[in-house]
Image (cartoon, rainbow over all chains, first blue to last red):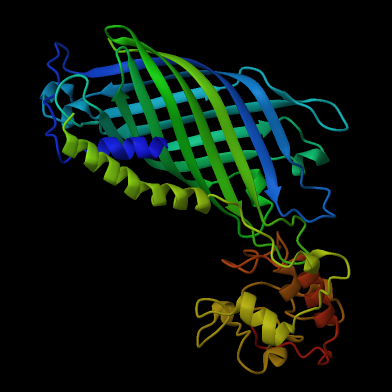
Length: 265
Length: 156
């Protein structure tokens, strides 16, 4: 549904001429973002070999995470519609403390973080400050989920280090004041997957990422947001008899509830 | 909001619905074809080394095939056995196929993850499974020694 929302805003692109970027005293623009999340990961193999003992699923829910990010608009001074709003974005999110429990054995210290940098081109679909905005986004991101384990178990747990190219759209549709609907969808093209995928023959990985939420304007330039995020990596393996690891593929899902505050000076 | 804009939004939203469904459907993990072949007794049999494994893993014009094969070693043209058994490697030291000591054969060693000379083979193709490696070793040991007449040849 969130893509439909974005599509709906896109529909107005041809119907309404973009308004000039708002006049600003500063030659550049931007915003800062601080957030907290409660996140989860669900990992499972698809068609694992029934007799395999080295294909462990993994689940964790309720992980607190902290997020810091922002957007820098270096071309605000031009005053040219669209160009003036082009932004360089960045965000880093990490779990300050996480341990994983093993069915038999001690807990394992676990590290989870992700980040991205990108280029965002907001297009205002109408006139005035309350016009919907849709923004193509392209960027590079990473997501690391690793375990401080060096024993035999290390070869069985889902350590991943995704390095990926992100292409997508995000959008903002003003609702009744002071609320704004936020939605985003990206296709992720992982260029690297990490230790888990190196175990399997001919692994191919794809991914999608979606966010849906609501922003609440606090004062001019400041807003609070509540959103739901979902990231899904799907992979296919091509094992042959004799391989140490045999499964058809894997599904690695990440979800989170995000509470954030944005400030645009 | 003008009515035509709403209609346009609805139309485009409808158009995007199949796209969303396609993206979601494409987001599924792979399935394992014929799982029984991975189980014990699933019937793994050694491939024909010369006619199946060499063409699959070593063939190609920039590999060990054609007029100018890598390391001067053609593993595809007829007469492979004669070019391998008791012949010295060109770029790496050692006997290509030594039926008396199969695991010391250069051909077998180059299929290991860390060969003592050069890069592990095959390059750009899936590495051999332990079962396939065992097949290669057994194939080497099954060859008839030529009496030690090591001469021209190539490396893997």
